[in-house]
Image (cartoon, rainbow over all chains, first blue to last red; front, side, top):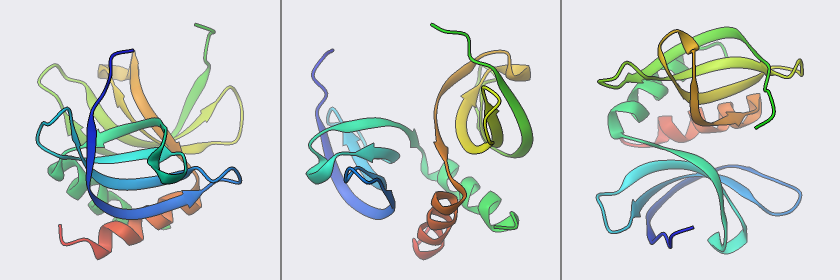
Length: 73
Length: 73
C-alpha cells in the first residue's frame, strides 16, 4: 500500500474504547497535505495504526448532527 | 469476497448525495442475520452497491451526538 501521510489537526472527541485499547475517534485530519476533513475512525493507542473509517465534509457533519438530534437516542 | 447478507431495518437519514447519485446514509442494518447496528456508509442508488463505511453501537452513536452538540458547527 502506498504511504499515506496524515496530520491530526484537531482531536474532537473519543467515541469509544475497545478492550485492546483501540479508540473510535472524531478528528480533523489533513491527508497527504490536503485540506483537513472530519474523520471518524478506529485508532491504535497513540495513533500508531489506523483502522477503517470514513471522512466527512463540514456539511455532512452538520447534517449528521441534525439527524442524531431528531432520533430518539 | 464472501457474500454478505444485509437487511436495512430502518433508514434514519441521508447525509449527502454525490453528483453520481451515491448517497451517504445513516441506517440501522442487520449484517448476516445478526443484531442490527447503526451504519454510516456510501450507497449507490437503490442500495444496489455499497461503499465503505463504519458501524456504530447505540452507545457510540450517543457519544457521537454529544460530541457534535459540543462542537461549534
